[in-house]
Image (cartoon, rainbow, N blue to C red):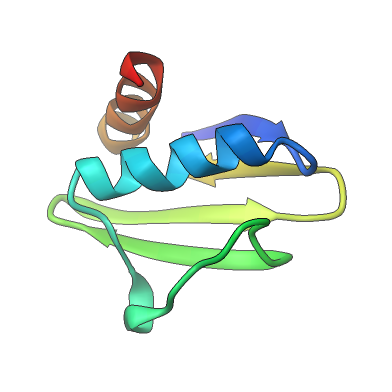
Length: 80
């Protein structure tokens, strides 16, 4: 499943995304430390139940991964 998260300029939502990823136990692949704004390109996160990918380009940020994981991230973002 792939979902659009926010525009590139939306730092508040990018911060919520990173917080939600941490909340479900997803950690950046290779132990990378991510700053805001997210750098352009692919950012992989390893969660206990699978892999998630955040893609940031000049226009937006999206999230891709197994349906259940993506939905858990969206629910965690909605609670914040």
